[in-house]
Amino acid sequence: MTTHKIAVIAGDGIGKEVVPAAIECLKRIAELHSLNLEFTYFDWGSDYYAGHGRMMPLDGLEQLSAHEAIFLGAVGSPSVPDAESLWGLLIPIRREFQQYINLRPVKTLDGVKSPLASKEPIDILIVRENNEGEYSEVGGRAYRGLPHETAVQETIFTRLGVSRAAHYAASLASSRKGRLTSATKSNGIIHTMPFWDEVVEETTRLYPDVTLTSELVDALSAHLVLKPWTFDVIVASNLLGDILSDLGSSVTGSIGVAPSANLNPEGDFPSLFEPVHGSAPDIAGKGLANPVGQMWSGAMMLQHLGHPEAAEHLQLAFESVLRDGLGTRDVGGPSSTSEFTAAVLAAIDVIDTIGAMDATTGNTPPAATASS
Image (cartoon, rainbow, N blue to C red; front, side):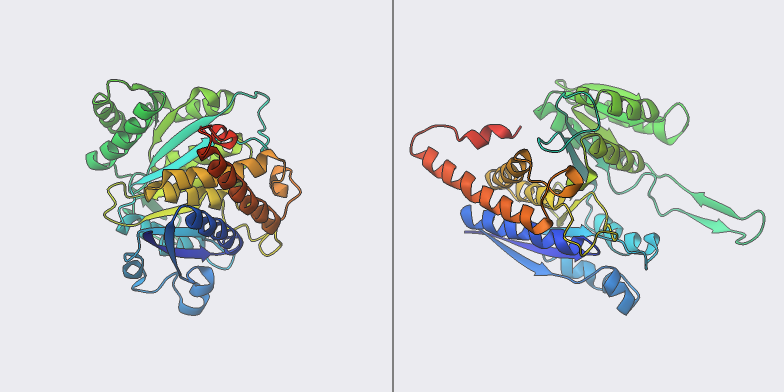
């Protein structure tokens, strides 16, 4: 039996509801696929900050380094400034563990109504450079409180940072439809964005089966709303990727179902898996939270750990429940968080039974055709 050590940080708000829901499903999947997932729980986040003045202990990163993956719920509370909550937990994890790829699937799910009139299916992977770019720590403020108070924030692009993001994105595109779109703003940002364009183009030349299109981010944003089904893989800088991925999730119907992976592709450090949604303090504790983003992030974690069949099994299960119209209220369904989770657990067992029966007949399980 394969064992994986996973650090769990439920964090804040609805993170404390969707993480247990997803872990229930992961444990059931693990049982059926002969995996041993060892979960270690850390009570870090805004409540920890209230008692200790920091989001995690001084040796927090050292504690996390003993695990293969980190499963995060949500971070953020009205009682803690966003700069404290983000820079005190998530960003140090991303940078210390060289999680330089942020991967966000944007996909149409049956049972989740898109605001678009078109019914064309959407299936995009957005690759966001995750360690540098616009979110650098270089800069500062001067003359505080005076009329000429000044704030400076430096954007940092390195050849290493841009090329490895481009390599990852081009490799994904090569395994899919062979179309890569690069987000840029080189007509207005005169130094960093032309550099981004040059490095992405140089890197993509190494993938002869991939066609690269460079598109200005304002036009790309409009394109992502008007014809999102024409995209395959999008690669973008830290800030642009952050914005485009949220926009893409909204176009498919709900940011509540969107997953993400913060990856160290080489596996030298743990990778982190989290839903895109925030802590949603307005609905926390009411049983209304949508756990799909957390479950889907769990499927991405299984994929990263080398278990594609288990990942597909989990994804088929929650997709089938959504297809049956049993989603949570934010996607127009009747279910509470716990009711949806129970339905997914039942679907996991049904799919496993169908798969086991099918193994004796040689037929393809009907559910297996539901995932792309």
